Image 1 (cartoon, each protein chain N blue to C red):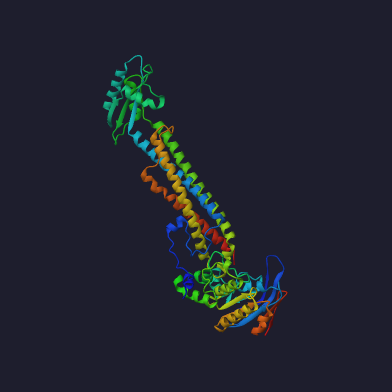
Image 2: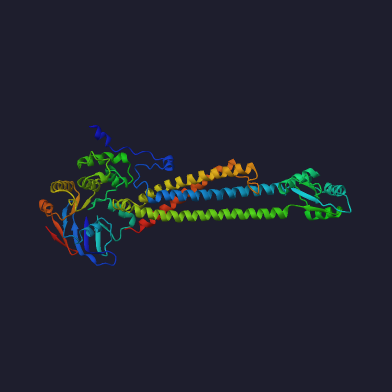
Length: 219
Length: 315
């Protein structure tokens, strides 16, 4: 599903942030991505959700070589990836419902087709009574759940979560982990970037460890 | 289900229509922020551009129609000037001229103007002249040509000059030529102004679109990352700018219509302008609707092309 081979990445003319990164994620797998701050976790995720191009190496997403995929085909690949951003990135001028429905709206589908699904999902993540609220009026945990709902609403094949428990208490962190595990059981491949050792230890899933831009694998 | 549950349900998408575009009510389903720092300024600038474009367009229509009217009026007529001469009485000069004209084929009517008619012609330029009986005035013969007349003007001028001294043929051609040349210059000037306004509007919209994209960078990037095709983002942005363009265009049109109505009213009152200003006719006003339509279209296309170019630089 996701294959990185000797991938290197740098910002502009700066130093290489990622060096010779190679790994492979199977369909339906659950992995953690760990490492100290500044090690390159977010940069690696940026490559995976196609927000950045590698400076060298091969990245294959869903069987497509990213370097040779035409620009017109990239939105289709992105729609197969759900992303929970570290800083949520909910759009302030839209309601919680509109934010969560965004990945479906951009496909050009009629709202009547997906409205029930979005409302059901929001209820499932505990935001059924906050659908018309603006993100600024939501608590950190509510924003986190809205961001997760937006990431999974399109039933992505791959879910990438950047520090998804960074803004919630340990109890909510465990609840969110159960949500990711449930999604994984339903067939979604999940990669969670986190500092939270308790979260990693609780799931006992394989770990991709990134340190000084280099990646190692721990089962 | 509680009342709160019901009230929190997502409301159905309101139908967007052209009225909502003009009055500025953004459909709730719009993904781009409904207004930003560039919005109000851009509406004002587009309104000013539309106003100037309407004035230039109106001036072009007025000048073209006036030139056509003058041409139609003057091409079918001649004037023969009979200057007082010491050797011959004015009445004899007029009789000799009329005799010549009577023999020329293609002349529908020829009649000498009375002294009162001549003074009436001079009144707008010299003021009341009825009291100045001492002022020597040439006599005039007004000649009307038939529509299919093919009169040799040089030959006619020679015959009139030979018939009696002091008779001159005025075909109005020199005056008409200068007038039409001035009218053509005015039309080209209007076209030049319209072109300049269009280019300026495009430049302003490109700048405003870039500013808007910079201000809404977060929205654009999130749309991009959730898999929105460039076309989708461009459609969202261009809808926003179409709305601004229509609002600005309609405001400019309204101000221009008021200006033209004021010009027409002042022109009809007389004395407000040195030359008679006909203003726009009722049938001309619908053409002015083209201006806000073109301005809105230009605004929309410029915004769309700018967005696509900016998005094209993203991976």
